[in-house]
Image (spheres, rainbow, N blue to C red):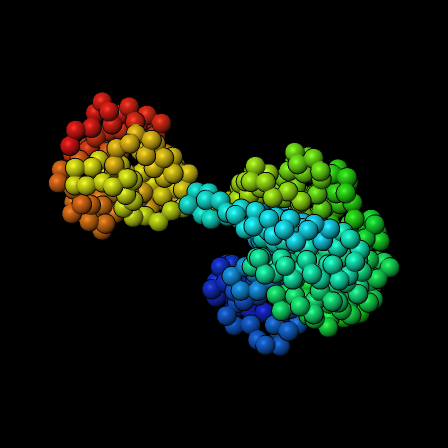
Length: 446
C-alpha cells in the first residue's frame, strides 16, 4: 500500500514555492499519493526524502522495457483508469506469433511480412512492436533454430514463448542481448524460470490460471527477488479476459495491490482473423500492455494500429503537424496558397483534397497548438494577428508572384482584418475541404 498524502507531506521541504506546478506542498503531496505527479517535479526534496518516498512516487503499475535501442518497447507506467483523467502513458505493444513448426522458408516469409507492416497515419509512422517466437513443436532445439532465424531477419524485440525452462535457457544463450520477454513462468516452473530470467536479466511474464492464482504466483516470484514482470491471468475467452484486465487495472490503481502492479499481456491469437482482430481491439481498449496475435495481414493490423493511436493520444495534447509551408505536387510562383491549422486531421484533410484536385499548391498550417479551425478561432489562436505573424515568419511572399491566400470558409469573418494586417488579398474558400477541387476549378485564377 502506498503512503498517504499527509505521510508524504511530512517528507517534503514545505516551501510552497509552486515550482512543481501545484499551489502548495500539501497539494503536491496529495497528487503524488494519487499517482498524478512525479517526485522529480520538486526541486528541493532531499536525497533522504527521495529514498523514503520512492514507493509513493513510483507509478502504481511498473514500467517494463523489452528490447533495446530504437526498437525498445516500454509498457506499463500507467496511473489512471480513464484516459480523460490524465492520459495513458505507453501504447499497447502488438506482437505477432511465429511458430517453430513452420519451415525455414515459411518463417522467413512471415517475418518478411511482419517487417512490411509499416503504416503512415496523420504524418506519423506506425508499426507492430514484437515478434513472439512460439515453441509449438515442444522441441527445444527447433525452438532455438527458429529464434536464430527470426533474429537474422528482423530487428523487432522478441517474446520467447515456451513453458519449457530448458528451451528458454537455450534460446536466451543466443537472444538475451536483445532483452526479449520470456513467456512464461507458471505454477509448475516459476522457480526455475525466475532463476533463468535473473541470470540473463530479461523481463519475465508470469501466467496464472485465474486472478487468485496469478496474485499468489506473482508474490512468489517477487519473493525470489525478481520484479521485472509482465502478468497474464491465463484467460482466453474474450469476456473473461476483459474482466480480468479491468480488475487488474482497478486493483493496482485503486487499492495499490502490488501483485497486480505490473503491465498485463493478453493472447488474442485465433484461426478466425476477424475474431482475432476484434478480440485484440478489445484488449487494446482495456487494458493490455501487450496483445499477441497470429496474423500478419495488413487488413488486420491497420485497424488495430489506428485504434491504438486514437486511444493513446494524449487528450490534452492533440496530434499536430509542424507549422511550415508544405508543397502539394510541385507548386510554382503561380500556385494557390491555402491557410489552415496545424491540427493533424485538419491538415491532412486539406492536403489530401488539394492533391485530389490535381492542382499544385502550397498548404500552410498556422500553429494553433494542434486544434481545429473553428476551435482555434473561438480560442483566439486563429486570429488575423496570429496568421499574419506566421505568414511573415515563413516568408510566403517570397514563394509566390501573386498576392492571394485562401482561408477556410468557416472563418470568413477574419477576411477584412486579415487583409488589412497582412497585405494579402483574402479569398474565402469552401467551408469543408472536400469542396476544394471544385473551388479551384471555378474560382482560382492567379
